[in-house]
Length: 102
Image (cartoon, rainbow, N blue to C red; front, top):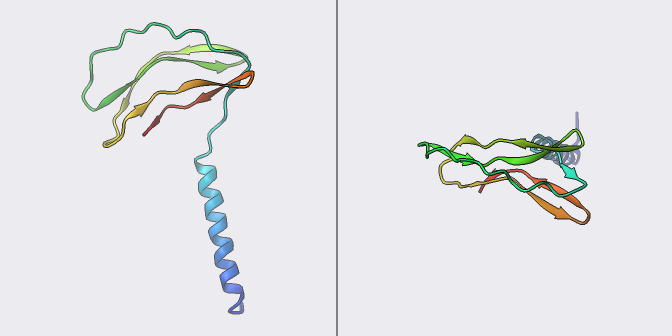
């Protein structure tokens, strides 16, 4: 049977394990490209659709090059606005910032 002094350590260990499990559940792959993406393509945005937000098309990095990913509708999250994904220069490389609700 554990002593009274071991109980706080066991509780602390359990909390640390839960925190690490939660953090890994939300971990995302970091995408880094060695050069700037091409200019965005011109897309025709469809008419507004109730309950959905338009996520514009963008260049994604795949297999050593950029590939166009067309825009699409996302279900709205009440009380939030959609922030589209975008590329950010970091030194000589470019890093993808995924779209998210803010």
